[in-house]
Length: 268
Image (cartoon, rainbow, N blue to C red; front, side):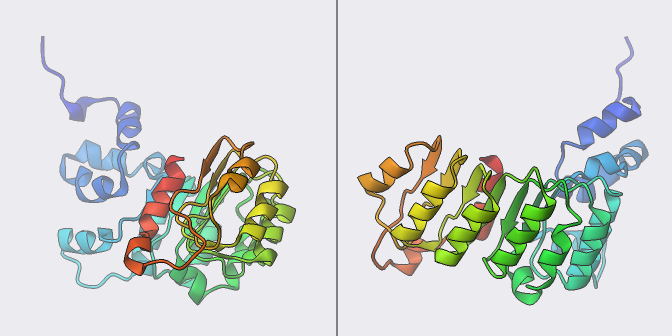
């Protein structure tokens, strides 16, 4: 019996296999296997989930001998491969307002979006105005809580299937806690790992978000995860509060990597 070769695999099957690979393999490995693999890798179905590794741009430039390629240009290039089919997007740091507008227009099917802290810091006012273009959005990751109230207002108006929010290194005061409760009444997944949040504001969330099935307030500062907290959170299927403390902390012990927060949230 003649041995079948991978390059002879039916096109649709090959697309299905390649669609399970990550961006790095699709960009740096698959195109150099054979022409049929390269052609299949250009199918928009392979580019539904786009998750940046912070070293990917450098690897891309080295592989293709490109001397100059900005974060904006690279992001638009990769997003363009999806041809509007992208459903999950984790953006790299350094994206400008131009790229955010491009993504809003080119990724109408987004279900999950993660915006890094530098993007929110540089262009805090533009994000709320773009939320309305992602009506299918169910999960949002924010690198900070800047402009949170306006972002949540737009989510409540435009995203009727929204269920999950992650905020990195947030400062959750009464205004932020109350906004989460009032504007996201049906939220199921909330990740505030590494946040500053006191007991009073934690109680606002615990008592107000009645549909929570996953709440991560581990490694937070501002409350003691005692029996009182555990009792208030007893209705939540998965409640994480390990490492949280009331008092001051050591910077080295408290350091949390932003990428860890992103992938912890996705896997949960």
